[in-house]
Image: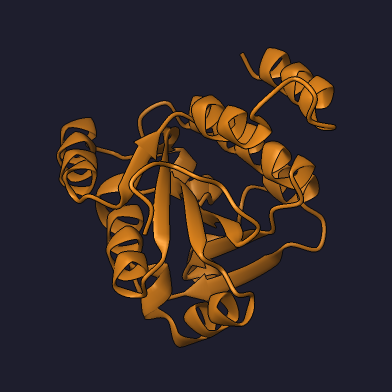
Length: 187
């Protein structure tokens, strides 16, 4: 794995459990939804596939409809596990997509995001957590978990704009103008 963040064609944006019921229970759910919307739109602009997971959707409801509209055709996976990669169907689907780098947004930072990141590392994937696009019911727990992940040498915990500007690399990128408009729209 690389020592610095380097985007590549094998990236996947994994949107973890961004369900309305959870958005109501985490700190600043509306802001989280806005930052996840930004991440989904940016990923789509870079032609990065987007996958949504849903914690027991038959009981808790599905992904926020606003997000699904931003990524028509994106795969949605229900799960009963906390780690997305502990679910055989999700893990196999991600393997089949030849993913090398998992970019994670969603919730809950201290539970599903944390466990998914650990399992991704075990699966030899690079992991980036979008620090401004994750949330939890208990911010102190989330901070401890992000710090623990940050301490691992191959987990990047970075703001969304930092990650996607790294993908642009310069103003000549064909997505630059549309991306800067996304930044303005989601400020």
